[in-house]
Image (cartoon, rainbow, N blue to C red):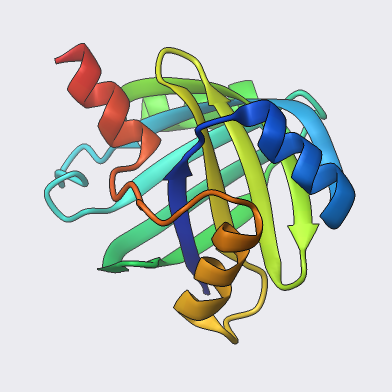
Length: 174
């Protein structure tokens, strides 16, 4: 099991952020489209336990099934994560449907990844929500200080958003 340590921040000027990243960071993947389908368990309300079950398909044909445990902190966000690659998006979604997992929402985004030291930086253009950045520690060393230092280098300030894209879309859709 992996512990995800990340923070989501608003972006004031996307062009400025991209220019800084082009000068200072290692570009990894740019303009990747991701479709995430979130599911609820047939016998357990995952939202009430702060857990997530997600199937993700990317425009690079990567398909992941991910479980995320409850958040143990919010700044930075820490939660356990188990992700496995699967071969067939439609089959895994069909399997979850047959097992009576309920589809909650679909989140679509265009994402670009960069690496800046020990931090993975993504610029996320989320359909219906806007543009955000996520800073995630590649290695747990450094913790909050490494994330804050990276945010400062990128001119982002420090106003973390504690809600997930799932939370924001559910809130927006009522």
